[in-house]
Amino acid sequence: MTSGDGWAAVCADGGPPTPFLAVHHPRLLANVRGMAERVAARGGHSTPHQKTHKSAEIARAQVAAGANRATVATAAEAELAFDAGFEDVLVAYPPVPGGRAAALAALTERGGVAVTCSRPEHVGALAATGAEFDVYWEIDSGTGRLGTPPGRPTADAVAAAPFGGRVRLRGLMTFAGHAYAAADAAGLAAVRDQQDDALVSTRAALAERGVEAAVLSAGVTPLARLESGRADEYRYGNYVFYDATQVALGGPDAAECALAVISTVVDVPAPDRLVLDAGSKSLPAERMTSLTPGFGLVDGHPGVVVEKLYEEHGLAGSAEPHGLTPGDRVAVIPNHACTAVNLFGRYAVHDGTDFVDTWPIRARRH
Image (cartoon, rainbow, N blue to C red):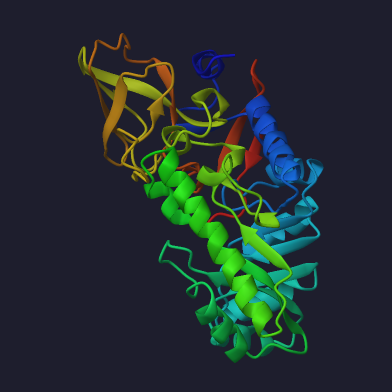
């Protein structure tokens, strides 16, 4: 099946009024199984991130593929993961005293809860709840978001944290988000090496202090096909759908993308221009890499570039006459699947032949 054939069938089958979010179910299941097999082949454990899909149905597919621990960013995503059959969750977001720490403590009534920390105060916030937690200490391997520097600085910070009793250090994690700035395969490999070196060197620095970090955790989808196997757990999320960014970075083929915003052409001001009914309320207004030319791939029309987004309008241009007319439906593979999901309340599910179901997107930000 080619990319155009797959989404062309979805566009031809009617479905809800546009713009709407469509899932190509066979591709989704192939992606879930494929990543589970890839991680298992390198001797790792899959801890898939629920922030991408926020869907109990997709979470259950990940459990069926062998995952028993989920990665989440919020308490709502953790609740969804437990409801779908995951036994444990890793909350990959630092705790702070007050309502957020209390919400994490409440989750421990449902299953095992690990939390990422990067300051002694984070560990203290967990200890103050009286609940039982594992901790993954976060290392900054180059992204500059959260985490302590690799090696001895992290070992010093861990030594200063109030571990003990019901709060235990389980492992080390890092998020190599700067992979999205890579320009080519060599750039991705360099980020992979940074990530691996940060984890391994920090484990060694802790061991010198007599502290064990049993688990090394990594996970950023652009590196999924390059991972060296130095980590024990992999927290991939975007892979269930993939998106235009992953394609641009040389990972999946566009024919593997399982998520698209279905949009209608509302005007054709010129043979090389068109206006879609999908604007910034339907397509993420972000470019995560300079390798993406616009705000999404218009499937089956590689020369069409979504150049500008208003709230309800997507303005696209084409180097050649595009042949589209008002009323035509197109599938736009968004630059960032995770944020596209957060713009909608439900998925329209297509089995490659027809629309077969509607799935709610449960754990959205409100």
